[in-house]
Image 1 (cartoon, one colour):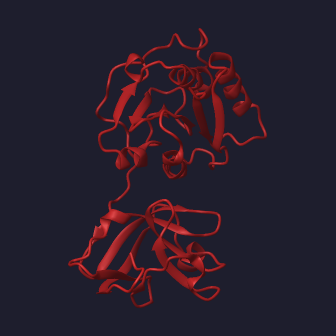
Image 2: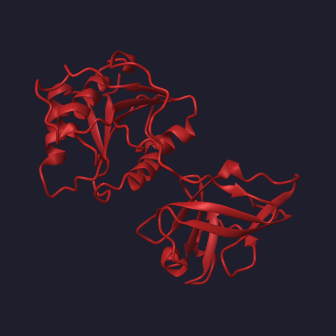
Length: 272
C-alpha cells in the first residue's frame, strides 16, 4: 500500500514556527505519511480565500487523502472542530465556513464533530488548535482511524454567506468567489449551472459595457489588455484580461456581485 497523504493549508505563512510544529506532530504520530503543502499564504483570517484555494486544489489529490486546513480566527472559542468526509477525501479543521465549497461540490458529504480530546497532547492550547487538535486528528485519520469514531455526526456545518448565482434569460448575476494573483476573477457559477435552452446553442457573455461574446478557451484569445470570459480550470466561470488584471479594470473584489449580459448563439466547432 502507498503511504498515506496529508495536505496542509493555513494562513500561518512560513516565517514563524507554526507550520513546522504541525508537521512535527504529523511526523511523530503518523511517520509513514507524506505531506504536501497546498498553501500557507492565505491572507490572515481570510476564511473565504482559504475555502476557495482548498476547493480548487483538494479534488486533484488521490482518494483517501487527508486535508488539514487551518484558517481559524475563532480559535479557542466555542466554534466546533469538524471532519468532513467528502467522497473519499477527509477534511479536518474549524467549523467556520472553511469547507463551504467542498460541501457545495459534494452534497452527500458527511460531517462529524471532533469530540475526542485524547489523540494529542493532554493540554490543548487555546491559541493553537492547529498543532494540538487538528494535526493529531489528521495524523490518526491518515493512520486509518474512521472519522465516525471522532464524534457525533452534525447536519448544520457553518457555511459562508455567498449569494447564489442568478441565471436569467438575458443576464447573469454572480458573486465573486476569488481574485488570484493575476487579477483573474472567479465567479460562483459552476460549469453545470449554465444550460442551453436547446441543443446546438452556446452562451455568449458580456462583461459590463461590452456586448455578449462567445466564451474564450484561453486568456490569450484577446489582444493584450482585452477581456475574456471563460470556464476556469477550477470549474467556475472566470473573467480575465490578457496580461492585465480584470479585477482592477472592473473594480471587483471577493464577495462583490457582478452582472453579465447573456445571450445564446449557434455553437461553433469546439465551443463548449
